[in-house]
Image (cartoon, rainbow, N blue to C red; front, side, top):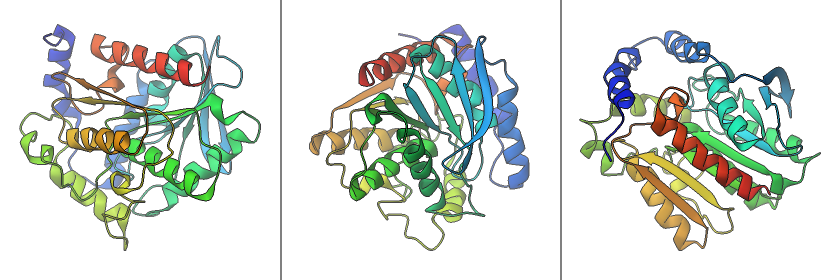
Length: 295
């Protein structure tokens, strides 16, 4: 099926709003935060708070099922992004899933390299399940947040903590070694991210740790025992292979994995939910997955 007229128009506009790695990090952070200026869902409250000692915004839509939580981990290459940039996106997902979303402001690189972001995700998750059944929680994240979600699941399993009901990964960045073929084969059609941006983000986040460390690149981790996953990715992404290989490795490890590859879509196209039918439909499917896993 051909992309919608709205998707074609938005695709042409996107490159105008993407700042390269040559821009100062403060400018890139401010530019991403401006995404939060788009209208948020109606009938949804937003509370600035702290969860497990980690700054966060809690979005609670009207009709949210008590106890059903989405721990949302934003993208941005581990160095930009915040609850401001991703609060709207997480709130729309929460409204569709009838859940409360906790959008973390985890510590960013290069000021706080690995494992600071993962440590913050662990602290927030443990605080949530201190008063909620873990099976009613889903951890979700986009791009670097998707990679952090996967790394968090592995860390929880390794220390014997109870795991959430599921994980929703949006265009996850799981391989910081850039070994997937799509890094080059999709470079001419991906409008959002480029290899030089990824290389700079790796240097900032990994620090002295090798990029192939399974905590940094959870694609290379042992995935045995992880909860069911929904992975959504666009066919035109340079990170496409980060998702397809994750699905293959997860299934080989006995994990229930659902992989959705949306034709003609780009990196984290779901961020345009409310403006583009493909993004709306993706969130509808994700919401069904979340409701099922937290029933």
